[in-house]
Image (cartoon, rainbow, N blue to C red):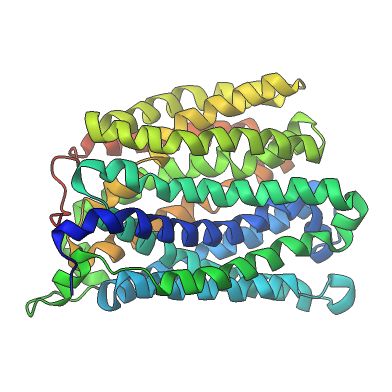
Amino acid sequence: MPEAAGDKPRHILRNILGGSAGNLVEWFDWYVYSAFALYFAPVFFPKGDQTAQLLQTAGVFAVGFFMRPIGAWLMGVYADHRGRKAGLTLSVSLMCVGSLMIALSPTYAQAGLLSPATLVLARIIQGLSLGGEYGSSATYMSEMADRDRRGFWSSFLYVTIIGGQLTALALLVFLQATFGEAAMHSWGWRVGFVVGALLAIVVFFIRRRLDETQSYERVAARKDRRRSNVVTLFRDHPREALLVIGITAGGTASFYAYTIYLQKFLANTSGFDKATASQIMTVALTIMLLLQPVAGRLSDFVGRRPLMIGFGICGTLFTYPIFAALAHTHEVSAAFALVMAALVMVTGYTSINAIVKAELFPADIRALGVALPYALANTIFGGTAEYIALWLKDIGHEPWFYIYISLLCAIYLVACLMMRETKTTSRIEED
């Protein structure tokens, strides 16, 4: 039964923190792959130079992304039919399985092609997991929040996404200092995946104790409830679905370019050693993490569109200059300042994109509406961003990547200008 209105404030913080902890571990498991790729790429792909090895590893990273729309479809429908909590529990279980597979996988020297095949299968499972995770967690946190602070509470989705990446980087820095380069290349990289699997087990039990949202319980009790499926989504909500795709295209490509790829860019293009590149990104991402609730709370006062339009303008105009300057930067302080500028810009998207998408859809199709269009755009533009960047570098045209991201930011800006202010037109009606 839905909890009484007077009880809700006491439970918001507990459920938001519980959902956030699970989301952090999900994204930690996902990002460990990218953070540790500099070390395990030769284990699975021993042929070629560092760029070629990273290119093959990025290709497997993209394979995981191609599974996300399928995961978003299956688990979005599941979360709309069985509940947000059920979707969250299933997603973290799948992520645990994928992490264990990578941690225990044989090397190419031991098993030949079975080694990269195991890596691909593990990323497929993790892609299915993460495809459902975003929709379920974004919907859960948006529905659990009170109306006046939805921007603030939903910003914790990207606090945990960034927190997962930051935790993966922090673990990498710790292991680098503890084990040294030789051990990290030999076996130390496996520790990250073991830690991720163990944390996922803990989160499984945390998520089983979460409350269900009032929005889902009220819809589930209705006899005239619509079935959540792809046909219903694109037939009844085509404008909203296309808006999510347009917003996600520029937002997610920029996020992956400014965060995941920049660690490799600093090492592979700017010329910093791996440890320094990791340290720069760790500090910068820590600051970015702290900015998310600030920007989310600001959106509760001024609305969502001003922040999103602000990033669209800045991303279109300043992505190329930031990357071009970083390519020729060899001072740590200058590199950090440029990285930080990019991360501050993209906060206009990351801090509130979850609530914006959730506010566009009614409760009976909200999890699928948030998850599937996001996953489609994320697969096409986010999952391939690193691969495109490395491929363009490999063929000698790296600056084309800066132009590519700038153009996607321009598409994002157009989508934001076409969008209504969701703070005042929210479809999340239950308080």
